[in-house]
Amino acid sequence: MNYTELVQLIQDYTESRETTFVDNIPRFVRQTEQRVYRTVMLPELRKNATSAVTPGSQYLARPTDFISVFSISVVSPSGEYSFLYDKDVNFIREAYPSPASTGLPKFYAQFEGKTPAGSGAFLLGPTPDQAYTVELHYYYDPPSIVDTETSWLGDNAETVLLYGTLVEAYTYLKGEADLMQQYQARYQEALSLLSGIDIRSNRDDYKDGQIRRGV
Image 1: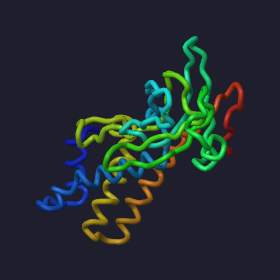
Image 2 (image 1 turned 180 degrees about the horizontal axis):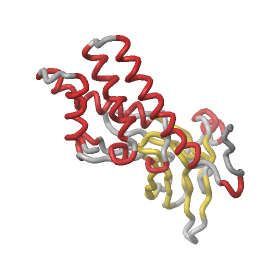
Image 3 (image 1 turned 180 degrees about the vertical axis):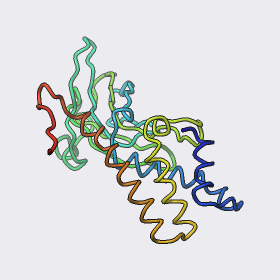
Image 4 (image 1 turned 135 degrees about the vertical axis):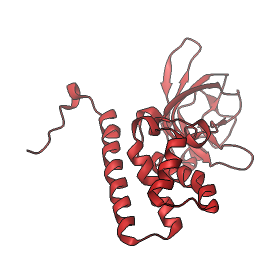
């Protein structure tokens, strides 16, 4: 399902083509995508990015599409990976009270969230003593189907996208409670199925054993 098809379905289901309502459909879709992407962490929402830390600087800028960390590693000049441990800012400040304490970073902390000036940063400890390569494996915000016409959700999980958008749209229209409950139930059912992918992505049948279903 592409964006044009989704917009047509929303208008058909709600039987509304009022100008203000139609103008708000992109907002309903974006709200649904945001809700789904923050509820289910899919393998398709992971991305790798590499950058070089600046010697003597404790801070590492985050990507603009960043949601949350999967892992951060520092790569030595010889190519060896050292994975950093997630800690609070207070831990790093206490362990390395002076920014002049340099070495191979061992820890990172979420230093600040997104700000008008940028996308936030990580605090590293100790302060890098040279220009190491850093590899960040993270969950990201993919482009909206509103902007790209197609998306992973539209291609692989159109039911959750459709009924999630209907919930937002019908809330805007102040629709009938019983129909709203139906849309909400269909959305939750589709979201539950999508969550199965999230669960499966964190398992290995050989190592963890197969998931047994009731009979």
